[in-house]
Length: 219
Image (cartoon, rainbow, N blue to C red; front, top):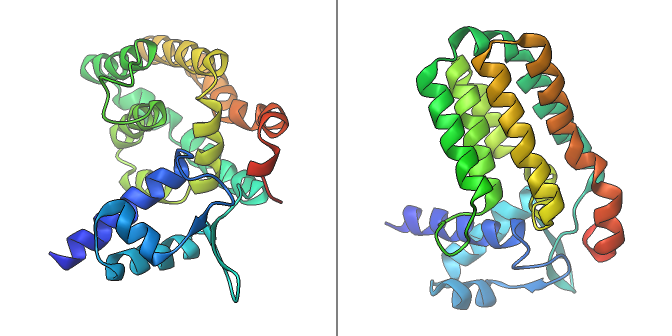
């Protein structure tokens, strides 16, 4: 029970950081986390320790604990890992994709196109992640899927920030439609071209996001 509560507190706190309900620079403490999630200080402290190791929190001696800024250097490294893995999956994905997978991809993208925060339990990025996790699992590359799920914190924070902008989110929907079409036709050249543009695009939006939210970004 205690382990489950620790994990739940960690996941809730991480989600609040990822989605900017807790913004870079916000002060965090075990007591504040305990009060926020109605838990004792033990799971609150455990969550803080884990998130500090992930570079999502900064613990400064004699000063306190703060939500970390987006580490752009780390985000670029995470992007490289995702790009390398997802591009390497293209051949196997197109070999394995079938009507059932296409239907599920369309289902995820329809939820993005018609996204209504009041009707969805998660964010647009959560649905987008599920769309791509389906691709990874279709290839059988479950370890790659786990790496991408667990190691993309700073790259994903940029994605969360970007998806708050309607014009950017519309591009995501359109690119997913093109990916689905290419997958249905097993068109490798088109699929590869789109997936590379799709994954890279968020980094291309970074400059605009920094202008809008200069206090959110670090090195």
